[in-house]
Amino acid sequence: MARTDAPGALRWPPVTDAPQTPPPYSTRATRALRLPERVESNDLVAVEEPLEIRIAGEPVAVTMRTPGHDEELALGFCLTEGLRPEAARVPDDLAANVVEVAAPGYDPAHVRRSFYTTSSCGVCGKGAIEAVRVEAPLVESDLRVDARVVSGLSEKLLAAQRAFAATGGLHATGLFSADGELICVREDVGRHNAMDKVVGWAFREELLPLERHLLCVSGRLSFELVQKAAVAGCPIVVAVGAPSSLAVELAADRRMTLCGWARNGRVAVYSEPWRIAG
Image 1 (cartoon, helix red, strand yellow):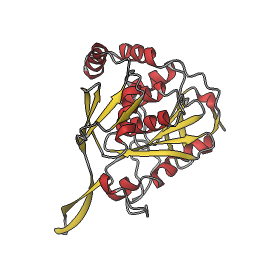
Image 2 (spheres, one colour; image 1 turned 120 degrees about the vertical axis):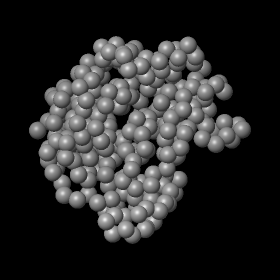
Image 3 (cartoon, helix red, strand yellow; image 1 turned 45 degrees about the vertical axis):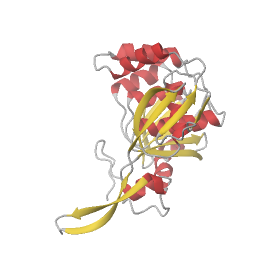
Image 4 (cartoon, one colour; image 1 turned 135 degrees about the horizontal axis):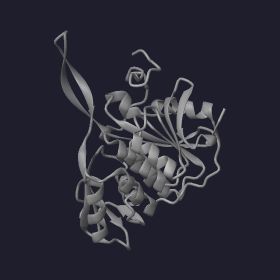
């Protein structure tokens, strides 16, 4: 597929470019009728299954995700929802698609209020940003990164997306060092799940807050992704696509550097541009 620099017309390389085989739990074989040739062939699609997250045996949330790194996903979700987890594991009864999270300060009333707010279509942008301030302090990191490093992150992320290469149906989040080294990458059918998996991994590795790191996402930047990056304390968040208006507002409010359209040697910086040199 041809590439283009025009916003709104992003094209990735063919999905057959990546040489690595995806994890078997992330894809499933199916049959597809290809038109106009009317030829049936085998195809791989991304796996999507529910995951129930429990605290103290009580269901807290169900998210549709791609299996794999489920404990990281549960930890990242709980962290970015302000639930202060300590650990995550498969439950003693070995129930499928369930993760049990240890969170000693768990308050069921807080969860009900929080989830009601984030799922209500009538909540205003100001209210949403104020809610994030409770869990995400200002990002005070003095990290500065060369623009060439930032614009090259999406290519490195794409090269590591094994399941996307096979299916074309998954999002990804990558955690990078200040010099552009890929430290961790996670894929999922949900863009927010991919971010949660990376945040959960960083939590386990005792890397939080991510004050000397960058996060890069494979698609656009929504408010929810910036919220999760803010809670993780990441100073620079990069996307191959565009941010939403509320994502830009939240990044500016938390003093985060938000970058979009990072590809082909170019990048658009929407907030705190002083962190991007060159």
